[in-house]
Length: 296
Image 1 (cartoon, rainbow, N blue to C red):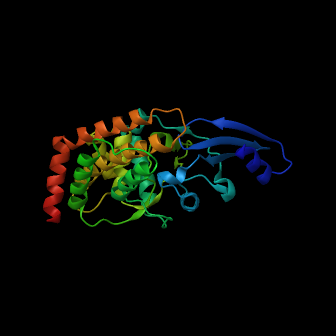
Image 2: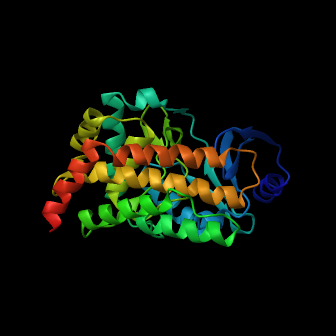
Image 3: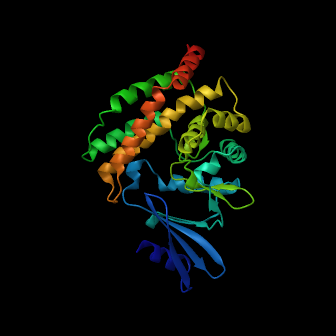
């Protein structure tokens, strides 16, 4: 078992208590207690590079996150085992309903601003290219193009044109509520495997749609974040579509490559349904119109 090899390599001859942690569909996470210290040993799942994950880039992003006080301390990277070891954060995941509270939104916004204003991280994340790459990967591994892909791709092209030129900043790109830990003093963000230089509005939209924000919560988020530039609310609204498109295509790839007993087809269908609901909403159409006027 990989975790046993890693534990023996890092703490040879020392007694270690290994406890499996829940959560995650692409990695195996363990809490390892050695003496008075506790660590998280994260062993990568099989073929995760097919999901666009570069473990060296993840290590680099995790180092930056630790440096700026947002992520846990990085203790080791065992490249031969695709294993990242971090200091255990004694904190609690933040439930989605609490993520929607104004005080939590403001705290999360401050953390994201720190990330986006921080030092560069390795790699690049462009949601418009990611969905294309996921389709290629799915087809190469025996999958099929989803029936709803062509229509979604057309909407994505409209979004990309409407947004116009975008700045690239360090981004996390996987802001599920489970990746936020409240340690009592502040919020930490974990799981940096999809991190890369990207569009901060994808991060903001990803946080929004993953945690069920409405327009009022989005306004609170943007105000606390200090979003600048032309019509930040319209940019966030447009990127909510791309967040679900990425998740849907992630599920499509997993149907072709994963050996886990999980309903990835249902996961993809859920996100395709949600992105279609977004695309048909008056709020989304109005946002694209406003953005298009500014870039025409």
